[in-house]
Length: 138
Picture 1: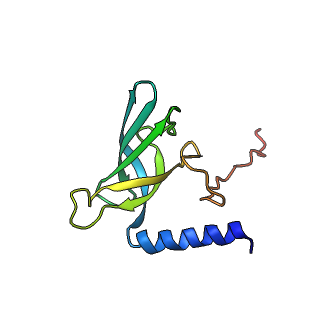
Picture 2: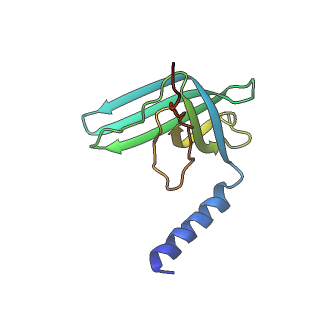
Picture 3: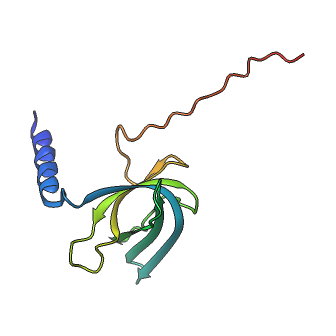
């Protein structure tokens, strides 16, 4: 195991130790998406995305938020529309805080368009069965 592999493994272990009990995943249909972009002096870019997701086999609704700040470069976000199937990976809010019900987004996988915010190797593979049209019509 090389230096890079040890460093990645140590980083992953410390991240899981710190946030392991708060990691969560939500899969379902998107009810609404709100994207707010702000630019200050053409240098500082801020992106705030709020997504409401209705999980499969549930009556509840989950609010998910994504914040990103960047200098000089415009921030990109994947195309997510109402009705798309998504998997959202993120962190639940801390207990006792006002945002304990919402999920802070780490990654979004759009299953409808098959795009990821952060590409992951070996992500969820969806197989669709292709029907053969080898029938003869008389």
